[in-house]
Amino acid sequence: MSKKIVLLPGDGIGVEVVREAEKIISFISEQYGVEITTETHLVGGASLDAHDIPVKDEVIEACKKADAVLLGAVGGPKWDDYPPEKRPEKALLRLRKELGLYNNLRPVMVFSSLKDASPLRPEVVDGVDLLVVRELTGGLYFGQPKGISEENGEEVGVDTMRYTVSEIERITIAAFEAAQKRRKKVTSVDKANILASSQLWRKTVNRIAKEYPDVELEHMLVDNCAMQLLRNPGQFDVILTENMFGDILSDEAAMLTGSIGMLPSASLGDGTGMYEPVHGSAPDIAGKDIANPLATLASVALMFRYSLNHEKAATAIESAISKVLNAGFNCKDMSRHARQVLSTSEMGDKILATMKASS
Image 1: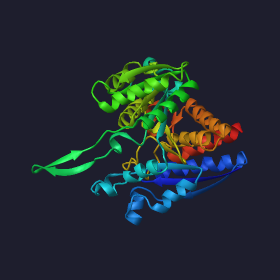
Image 2: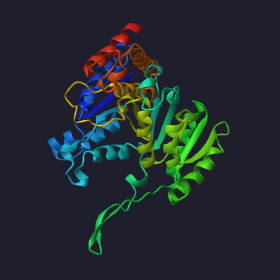
Image 3: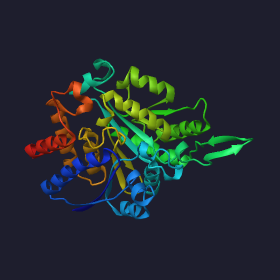
Image 4: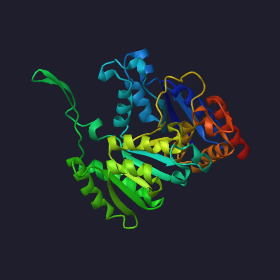
């Protein structure tokens, strides 16, 4: 089996956490006899600095030809004053669009050893294991018309929340199929009491749900969902929602674990899958070897599961992460709840050593 992975470290701590991921990928290649080749490209602010563009056409083409893409993070205050078309985040949006990545999976699981790390009471987050299924290529982030213009002597900013039935159908199917492999419950989140796009969303979800009689469906308004994630997060199994709502809710859900540095994500669809940690580029700690690489390493596990079809490797990574956390090791962002605080590189080495010991 021969596989090709494109690495896009990006900006800030993205470079550091992807470096740790390379250690794990190399070990799996040797341990399981998988021929894996990697190539690294610039993206985001790094690409702007080198090429004056957030992502080059050649990088997009390389990603399309790969079996999987691993992204670190993009952005930072250095590029905040760039025009909209040259913001680092444009690279991320273009990658999602051109790779056809409409399905974003963000698993949120509270490890028993870290339930005291959550800002919520331990009894509230104990046993939380949910999956946010976020539509990734529609809604306000991509709808047209969009932009800033002048009307009656003043500037007006316009964004359009737009969804087609086919866009809603495919993400709904993904959510129900995911629920069938979990606890068989889907919570569809919208704002159907106000938004026309949400009314179409709810109508379409109801129709698709009839094809999955074994899965329970409930509808929840987005503001109520934000509250329920804090009040009783254990009630959720699969949360299905549109692009912007999912962006906000998944970050809120991430904090149930105590740190956004703990959560991975997978973006799937018509083309090459892309995997990335939920956290940003964190320029304030970049280069200090203190960033938590666990979200990136967990993203590598998802990559082996969904794109490289190697469940054994995925399970080995996730098992090593769990063992290391249960043994009391963590990084600076979780220092209050760690027996020993490790640097970025030390954590990568610890996960690697644990995997070797278990092989």
